[in-house]
Image 1 (cartoon, rainbow, N blue to C red):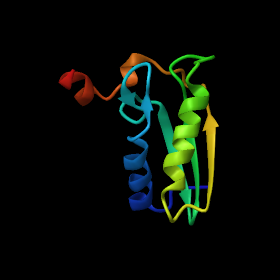
Image 2 (cartoon, one colour):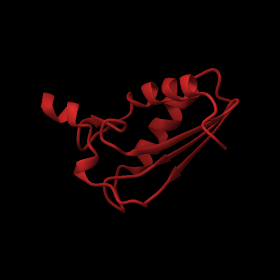
Image 3 (tube, one colour):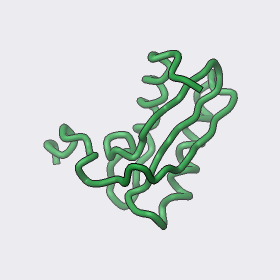
Image 4 (tube, rainbow, N blue to C red):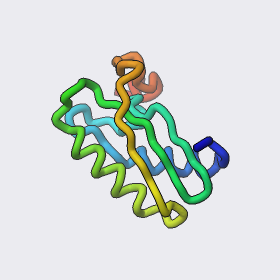
Length: 101
């Protein structure tokens, strides 16, 4: 699966900003948890990480991602893969977001 349509990929990323990490209060995109979005026709695969292994919010965030993706009519198939390489760090937070806090 490849990133074939950059506009569709951006649409997905924008929608993923609706998914908040409830412990941190930031969306998963600005928090740096979304590592990659792969789009091919009507299928999407998302690589996402958590702030820590064993994060108690993993299931909640996964379900929230699935909910957001289900509201995008062009998506017929989606896969969310939790990845741990490379490990998340606070340096991955969007600096523009941190400047507003």
